[in-house]
Amino acid sequence: MFNPLVSIIIPTYNRAHLIGETLDSIFEQTYTNWECIIVDDGSTDDTASIVADYVKSDARFQYHIRKDVWMKGSCSCRNIGILISKGEYFQFLDSDDIISSNKIFDQINIFNESSYQTFVFCKWGRFNKNINDKFLYDKMPIYDCFDDPILFLNNLIVSKGYLPIHSFLFPREEIDKVGLWDDKLIINQDGDYFSRIFLNFKSASCSLNSYVLYRTAQDENSITLNLNENKIKAIIFSWETIFKRYKLKFKGAEKKYRIYIKRGVYHNTKNFSPNLLSHSFFSELKFYFWKERLISFYQKLLKNK
Image (cartoon, rainbow, N blue to C red; front, side):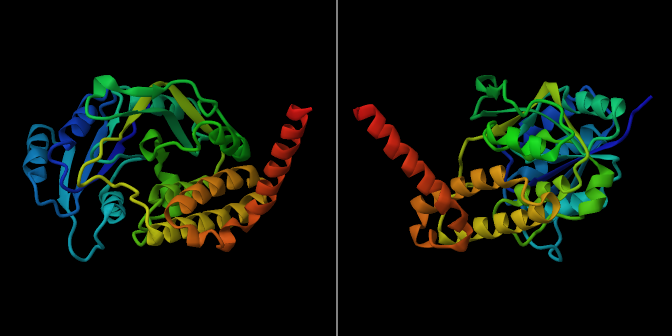
């Protein structure tokens, strides 16, 4: 029977009021061979006591506190979890998000049917305070099977351009190839880590019967963009690094996806730090903006005839 250990890694910081829902979604998994490694980034609230109840009631839960030799931040906490873990598969999960009860079970079954998978992902949605009020993105082109990385990226474009990191299940061999999370990044850490895994793409499948939820409620401890010039610069740097990797691997075939991402970054830069619009990162967009203006001009001419 295919019953590999799954390591669920959860960084947390001052989530006493939310982490219980997250851990409940782990406890309720129909797949039972898992370890849940919770790494605390130095919480000052009651996170420790909340988690202690789960650790006492179920030995599959572990609680660790980040030591000062590690840089502060969620990436360091995930790295500690990776080094402690013993699982053959990895589930990354933030301490305010949710996974459906059959998520790991369904994805492990897909790996069992075809081990030639770089990763398996699932549907996703959002919720605010009440899980019962969730909004699930139920039908998107990305919810499919892929053996072509460029087709995956192009389908991602028309599917909001994004899959949250907790929608994935990764084999340990893929994690071993890319190593640890970059704890020096201040933004887009998920995108950076996924891009490194994506370079080794063989195939990927979607678990159509399971889902994850991303919490959109904002409080004083939420990781929000609150974009400023330093964060815009960090976003540009992050995507520059990712696109250099993709260019070496895919030889420019990823251009459609690259343009899509750059346009999104351009929009945020225009709103929050317009002085950075002259950055060379955006130079590739000039042709597309010119083309759109030309099309718009001719459409107006035709309309006025």
